[in-house]
Length: 317
View 1 (cartoon, rainbow, N blue to C red):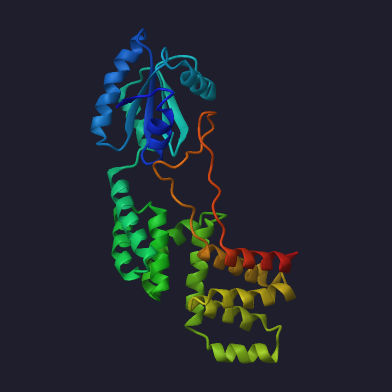
View 2: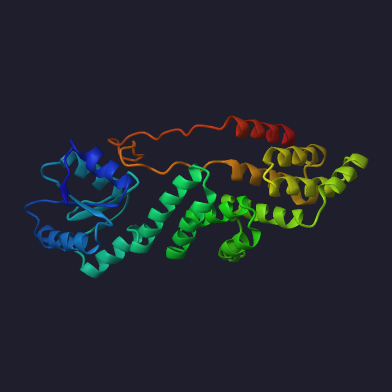
């Protein structure tokens, strides 16, 4: 537990919430309900074993912060508790509510022990992936998914690593829960839609002969079926730019061919090549709606991806 002031608001609250949820208890010495709520919150901080941090703010001593938070949430009374995640106030509750209700509130924002364990495995796996050690990363990713099946980042990385190693059957099995959910989703997440395209490409590549496809294209440049299958073959072999070049040829000749299949696969390849946004780190400038918060950082771009995005835009428009 830490006391928040205007001097340490940035470091001990906003920046601290970049690495773990922080519950801010706004109280005052004269407030009777505040005195009964405080010990319950301290007890829960211990019971949750460090999965969230409790911070306290004396509204009489820090009226500027208390006023901004009260206005942001439309609250005029205390005790008032605000949950900070990723440098932002995301939720809150008012009054000395029962412990069971506080637990329900916390469980909406505080990761479970399994989720934290999975995140640790994922962090180690991502370091191995950055070093290009796919084989060593696989066991970490598989354990992360087993520990927390809802960790979509771990599942994405696991399926992607398996595909990069050419282990299609294992990738299909790991992707199966996502495919089942996608059946009930009108717009599946772009990253998982891209994985589905990669899996389909590998399935097609196992049935076709690239030399025969190239011969068919040489005989008829508008043989889009052959050109699309060749693009899939390139994708299966991780020849990503070659795949996009073939798809551009289709798009330039017939944008609407086969329900815009070429454009959709092209976009999927771009998605597979795009690096995910970096995770917020403790010490980084948090993004917040509060005036006293920091500014968002603009991510850098990839010249190759920018080039192929421009090519697609020119072909479409």
